[in-house]
Image (cartoon, rainbow, N blue to C red; front, top):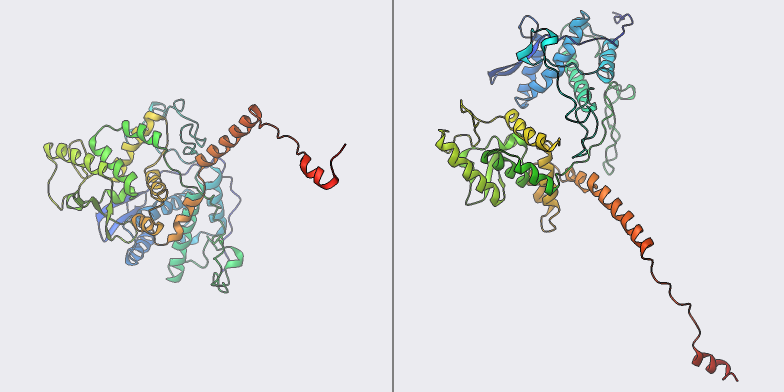
Length: 429
């Protein structure tokens, strides 16, 4: 059966329709569903998610994959294409649209259904333009286009989704609309690789973008002090102190229980993101001081108390366990006061730099504290950071200016010793 051909279409003015949604069910057997415009689960996606859960994926994996699949389904709905009738031209146009078009502006749920003229527009005058470097941190702000990481993740998800259904003979699929790079289709990757050499980085998907290499950034000590001073509560100060102390991921620290915070041993127990194992992490004394102050306040407000109770709770009623989005918003409020755009993950990078800067701290221990599978993952911290490079360059220019201002005195020209000449040639008359 020949592949379907699509007429040429102009995507310059195409707007992705905001229909369908990713729905959190609260059911551990099926934590997330992708719903169509009639609020019914999309069956091919539901089958794929069930396979992911059977492969011991994290419950958050279907949520992450669901965002990419919903974006692709909205594209198919807009052009009235069945998911199992999509061809390479559709995949090509979709990835080209993600590369060149502006991201759809999501309307807040409070303003949906209103006249667009009544919806308040964000004030862009208070901060840098989208995509430009932040004047405080030097990090680029969120741009109007999809980032290469987002496009790469989307391409990988869609390619593996179609691979799954092709292997299971689902629908009318014949070929994957998201193919591999041409020279990778007929052979196994790295089939003749020399084990004594490192693996070469190869692009896998034909429409997968190139991802720029990112250098981890640390928050300078003086800026961290300013962020810390901008926090509103003992809870927020304790969270920040733990994050910058032991480098736990933001969502990992939020899994801690009250019984897992052992003040005497100076450790706190968390559930690791990848392995989902329980691990005790060390932390500095200041973190436990702020934690104790926070706990005294929270218990007076009626927060549940017990060894198996969550350690972190919301500050406002109704009191409930603190989630990642609320913690991120807390940190963003402190960022806003400084005009910076650091993230919670930058706290993890900062903690890593502080540990690696200690000559008495073996890197293998840092690897274990961070929960990295391989020691080689710490190599990215050996590269000079942006601030280090700029500081070294400015110091070089300062030394050059100092040499010009205060040049070294010229040494006298070497002369022959008179006694040596007399010994060789006799005394001169």
